Amino acid sequence: MIITKLTESTTMNSKKLIAGHTPPTIVTSKLGGGNEDLFKPNDNFDWRMLVVYRGKHCPMCTDYLVNLNLLLPKFHELGVDVVAASADSQEKAIEHTTELNLNFSVGYELTIEQMQTLGLYISNPRSTEETDRPFAEPGLFVVNEKNELQIIDLSNAPFARPELKTLLMGLGFIRNTDNNYPIRGTH
Image (tube, rainbow, N blue to C red; front, side, top):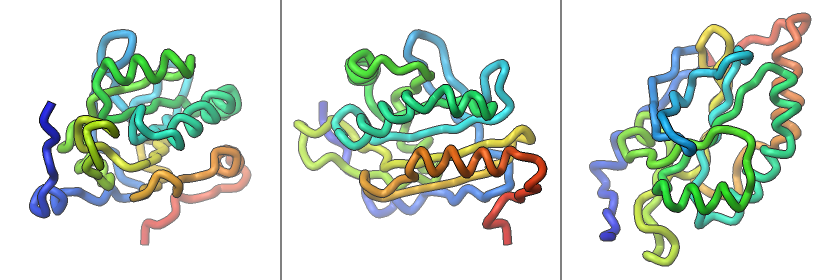
């Protein structure tokens, strides 16, 4: 496959999502069949967390997904559904997640347009050995029961992303109605 290089004009089309606003509708193919609406919680959950990862080629993403899978029951206890997505092909996504035995939905083949809509940083592969297409750098989004973006975290590097135990603690604090914690960053 030929690697498509991003040009300055295509990288300028990313949008900034706004905390407290309704997220865009982003639908990807889902491992196991069908499609996945990345911001729509599955039954029995009223919140949804979307973790965008770089892809199978990224060992830090693998570690992050493994740790997320270990903490998944705690996220579920808070009523937070979890989904992960990448630009990987179906084949790479299957290889990767089969090795990891993940217990949450995984979307694949995020398009450049979808990555831009999410406001993600997008990188070109360093070589065809790394991967065969432009890919998203890490992003994490949490949507609350009102379908509002509660948390937005974007990075342009694989080693800068939220620590999951700290995130879990913060979500527990936010979800405790006694704290009356507002969506931050709306000024």
